[in-house]
Length: 221
Ligand code: DC
Image (cartoon, rainbow, N blue to C red; front, top):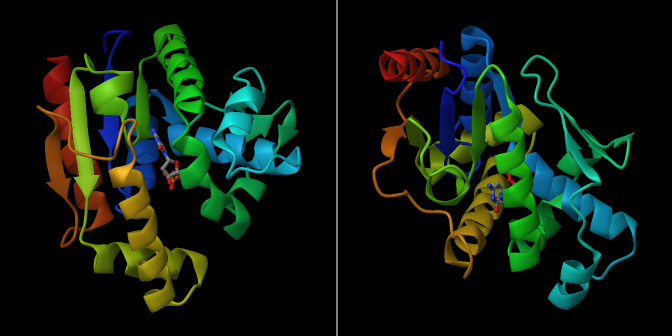
């Protein structure tokens, strides 16, 4: 595989993006970057520093890229904030509720996008990068650009099963976050021009993984 194989994967929460991205990275021997975890870690950093995250000016002033330290090992995903492992904390309800506001702040996005590009450029193996704006903004020249999605009910069912939460509430939370993510002014969640859409509503995870691996192998030639 050439060193530069970059696979960009976007899509809404619960579509199976993370599981697929990790499995594909592992199978092809690539690095793996979960950019959602970076926005979550930034949100945790703000909340832990006592910043009122509804104050976007304050969020912009407090944001720093150096404190966000993601793992790029698909077998050990996780993230540190200034050396502290916050991989569990970033999945809390408080962070999940705050992350749309923090990730909508343009200064935060600029810092994270630059860091994501730097990590991808420094990867010696090639990398799978997953998020919301990877195909359109972060890595528009990636040879593989995918949008993995599923209908809201299927996504809520999967999330509820993963988290042991109640389906109706999970679906309503997901739809709220979809709406916030897809209507924000900067880099809204949308299918980038030229990205290939994979609808996983009626697919098994293993079939999605196999399909993405086929696409990646075809791209590598
Ligand atoms: O994938 P996730 O649910 O962990 O993402 C958390 C939040 O971060 C989500 O509400 C959207 C935001 N996000 C973003 O704005 N841009 C990205 N590239 C990745 C995630």
